[in-house]
Length: 450
Ligand code: SF4
Image (cartoon, rainbow, N blue to C red; front, side, top):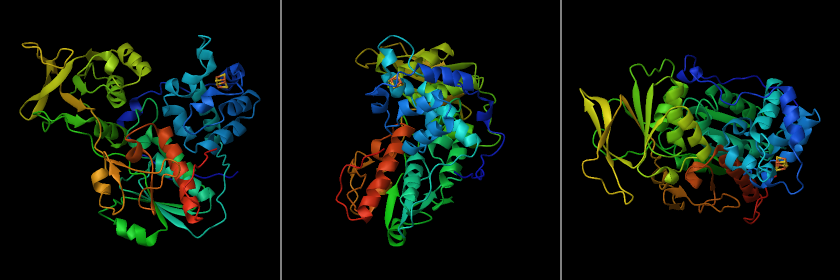
């Protein structure tokens, strides 16, 4: 083990810093007590439910026996993004959702908070567990510095390969730094994790480098032995209604990025906000706005509550925190005055989504936030001859994450269409093993992730 100093810092005076951590760390005693509850199930369903297959009973046992460093090693060996995943994973529908305690109608083990306890312990002491593998002379380009590329780069380093990560934004970390709700994860913690990952060595990070503008795909193919595409998703989708260009009409991901990263950004003068959408991003931004003191926040969703794609446990918080819900509300126009948003007019629809005559409502708003999805990057990537794009996603061999162009591999949101950080971490690691197999001339086969 060795230590690595923090090198990359988020700017000061960010709005997200006013938002409290909703799942604060467990004390050492509480963590141990909770760990002692674990039944150490032989056929642990919690492991099956984890996309990175962390040996959960093993790390919990280590906490219970006082070996917290060992617990962190178990976690990070399977998932090098375990520090952020401990905070952002929807454990209620993954590991903790599968915990056998649910069948007994008792609270499941607090796996996420125990994981945080272990990785916080390792990070605060600068404990490092992994070394670079023996140099192979191979070099890989990674597009995007989000969770998929970071997981891939770390695994490639363990396998002895060098890599260069190209990131267009000034800060690395992808959505962890720019897009995850601050009450789960703030940019400082995301960047602390990036530093930790880069600390293994053999990974160069180049920010401010947009592929296609600052460097071409042809150049990457010429200069590197393989290319990993971890480009994520594009800009917020438009709704396609009048008034979207008014001041105060914004995309959710863009707004969250400003809240998390932009020094001095404020929401002064916003007393009413409307969030369009019913997914997890809509939930996140609605809660953030409440936490930042916007008195009246609406969510407008075109179907009923049961049809919302957002997690049910998150919706429960939305209600508790006082967000107003408007169901069967189809946005018709963003209304404005003097170029600024004043409200969102919605058709109220029946169960067949047909507008009910005379039932339109206008939700007052100085801010209308569109959380109806992000554009896929298929068009940008379609310029690569030999790459197959299906429904805007890069097609890969699911075992190796090799694309239909043998030199290109891909993982994360640009492949899965937008899943969790833990899925990106698993796919990046699997792709790194796939790249290693490609260098060795192995046939594509199932890559077992430990
Ligand atoms: Fe422990 Fe629950 Fe996993 Fe069983 S399912 S090993 S009790 S965390």
